[in-house]
Image (cartoon, rainbow, N blue to C red; front, side, top):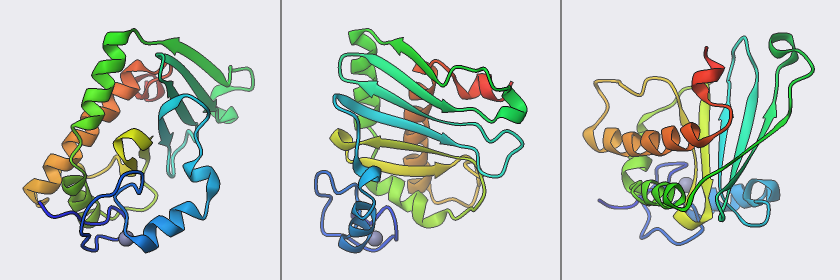
Length: 182
Ligand SMILES: [Zn+2]
């Protein structure tokens, strides 16, 4: 499948490493925000949850380190959770789980995922974000309308791979979406 830009959907010649499947213009816009491309030392993946318009505006970033350590930074929404919740949670993955994570992230086909992004456009929905330089991933996916029957098969395949990766990252996190929606 031919590569297309994950951001604007234009055609690309190829996917270059650490350009996150973006065309020159879209990559330049991403790089304008240095914090968007900065990860703490030894972090290999950052998985983020954004609530969109919701009653609970809690959001989080979960950092996965190369040695299996996990640090989750949570911005709790006090009206729902009170003021005393811990803003940083930690956990650890064994080598097998680190390998599993890398395998699943590597299986995401950027060209298929870009077709999903080109097809999908929803504002104000909750979305999740995976940032992993090693896997050329810097991508947000809306958690809404993922099962639309009209979606082209290639787009469905791409978003399904992304979703599997997200669910694995989420399941390894101290605070999960399941706990959030309980
Ligand atoms: Zn673009």
